[in-house]
Image 1: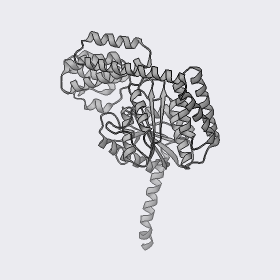
Image 2: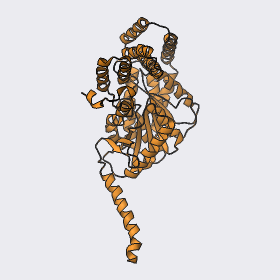
Image 3: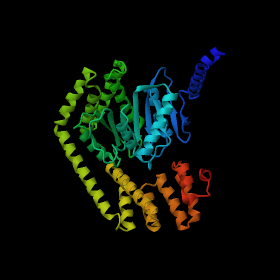
Image 4: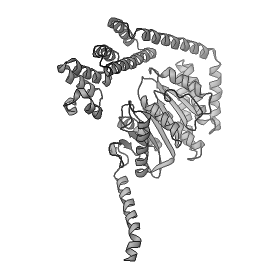
Length: 438
């Protein structure tokens, strides 16, 4: 009996460990899981992808602005396989949360994943898009264990300036992203700090970066890990990267994109300058390009373009509360006929402004004016599910019962999935979300 009493706690502990291992075994590798409930708080969940690799693996915590954890994981699954990164996408972090909520979500999320996954605690990373980028940067500032952050479509939290931080900052923006110029300016601000930083652009708008661009950001983390000796130096991987960088550089030069070519040289130098002596040639080429007349000419043209863009934003701002709808219809039609990156950025700027006016006016029950801006929001950004969701809210308030279902079906068709928000929406009480999913 004494022996039983002596060993009972040990047997209980072993049973608990076996239970935890059993839970871990239920999370298969090589398969995207859209919902894993957190053990300590089942109101929180995350999407997950664990590549088929042995040992402890780096982890990337992904923050989507709409709380769609599975979206970036599905988009970057192949990169997880290539680089051997676990991907964890929060289903609770989304626009509208405050930073206290973000901290609570982070605490529950990281505890659950540490308990259940083979994570290399030396290689914890964060990545977010738009509002999720601000969350990722906030968490990286507040939690020293994060070694690198990817900020896609937005920078540090409002009011936080560039400063010396211990984690690597990778900024990513589409050429048509309304925040592109702000991110470029933030990157320049980081040059005055000791922070390791990179800036990547892609051909697109305010959206999650394509996999080929995100692959560059992930590669940067690999090079950081080699430099810090967290992983062995992988010479074949370095040589493959140099070959791909050379290909991109040649393509930029052939197309006459001198600034993009110089930026490619700077990126490769930032990645490999302290790691691989052969990368020095990229710095030499980059310095030469930056001194060339072609570079100065392109830089002057770009500066003039950005000045025109800023002036257009100011004109729009002056008209938000006084211009009639025909003015905005003309502006939006003109922008939508223009395929340039600047036009895309201005459309995204108007989309965000119309969204903010719509939500503010709905919040103060100024429904007539809310409808005015919701209609403009739908016009400038017709594939944004939020515009149609807000329209349905306004339909109920206006007594337009017949229009509620079409607007909600449109919102769902365009990707609206926030069931909890729908359930809490006063205007939709008594309705079932499922009836709008077909």
